[in-house]
Image (tube, rainbow, N blue to C red; front, side, top):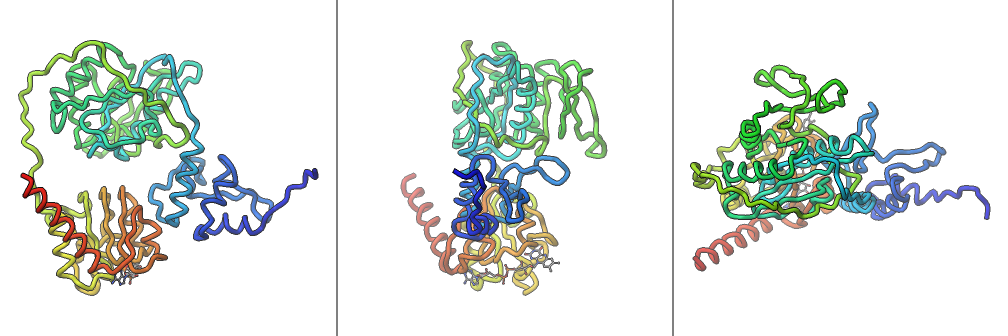
Length: 423
Ligand SMILES: Cc1cc2nc3c(=O)[nH]c(=O)nc-3n(C[C@H](O)[C@H](O)[C@H](O)COP(=O)(O)OP(=O)(O)OC[C@H]3O[C@@H](n4cnc5c(N)ncnc54)[C@H](O)[C@@H]3O)c2cc1C
């Protein structure tokens, strides 16, 4: 057999063309890690910059979380290919433990949680000869399936009602038991208003440690007692404070890259000793209902956003009320006078970070997509299956916006009616 490398120009063209129906498959067929690199027609190595985890021009590893530039099929295919390429890692006898207490809003790991787990992996994997294991302590009902992919070696789950909602005393009792029994080398919590910031400070007090807060970076430092130094925001966000990494650290979102190359065992763990029941002086009375219309766009968790494809404005506002969503808009909807200026989402409007962004009749212009990069899940309703918003969306519904919103409202009202009858 000749050793001459044969090229397939058509396949190369499909690999370059992100909108081609076979793009994802062709990309995956490049083989293993080469999915983000291939030999171009000129003989030069080409890079696919949107593949998960690529090295940016400044040498730093970047991740395109927005998916903004990718076609839906390619995103799914590339993500699937990336999942398949993950290396399985099992740490049988860890030299030490790095304990992480993720927020898990809604029973799922948030992006902030994943960044924190990435940070934990850096600490655990620093010495390949003596690797540590990442232990996650999670509370309440779980809907998350990807603990292993997020970098967790050991999972301690406490699903009891005692730990649901705002229960810092009960949770602290668990963390204290973990400390007594497993003595983790590091404790990492998200410095977030969802619970991590409060619990982390309580834990530090209980362990008699001075925590590092607002941490956004850690670096190896042989002169520090734990071998690491950290940088955190301080002085009301006005300055950076550097100090040796203490045992308890509360980190900000984007403190590290989330895990994307390995799949860990996420082995279930239980404590041998009984958890001492905590004296509970706090009663969680549940969430206070707020008017979604009064929530600032930048803080809204669920946004129903209208574009030029919305014609039935009464139906749109009614849908927002029934779904309990905060209203957003494209620039065209604002310029045409249908929505207030402060509702505009996008590069020249508000950058939003909703957990769910429902885009109704919005084409997905780059200026709009820039504003929704930080959203967890994007749902699109549009007549045009080829538009960029549909390519960006995690879930797409092709059809007339008025009809689909009306059907959605009817379904929700029917479900609520059923629940009321049952009660
Ligand atoms: C400097 C600059 C800054 C900008 N900043 C922003 C910004 O911050 N935010 C922003 O949004 N835009 C911004 N724009 C404008 C942007 O380029 C787009 O023009 C705008 O986002 C398009 O809005 P749209 O998607 O609502 O409208 P269109 O592009 O007209 O899209 C309408 C969509 O609705 C669909 N549709 C039509 N009828 C129906 C129906 N009955 N049911 C369902 N779907 C239907 C169509 O298929 C189409 O996809 C900016 C532009 C410039 C030049």
